[in-house]
Length: 130
Image (tube, rainbow, N blue to C red; front, top):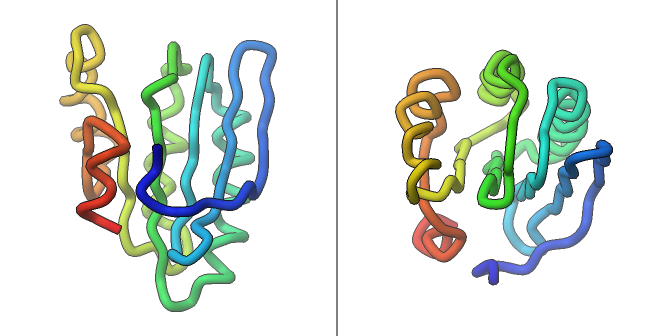
């Protein structure tokens, strides 16, 4: 359960995966929920939608991505994920990634290549940062 209210913003479907974007109801944030397989074309569309959202948030906003239900990602995804930092008016890039084995083996990769501002292990931890 999220510690804030969200409103459906956009959905991207792939045969093996899905990305759902929500905007905060009373908070300037974009919450991105990824599940299944995520590939570069899906991320390109996410970045387009996030750019559109960011342009409407001149006071600044947070990009929060929940990867808890992510099962596999394309090896070229970090190239696209690195572009998140270039989104207009972005304050923080927050990644929710489980810290259980084997997922915790990816933490150095996430910190090194993707460079989020915050790396959380559960949705519950968002309450401290929103």
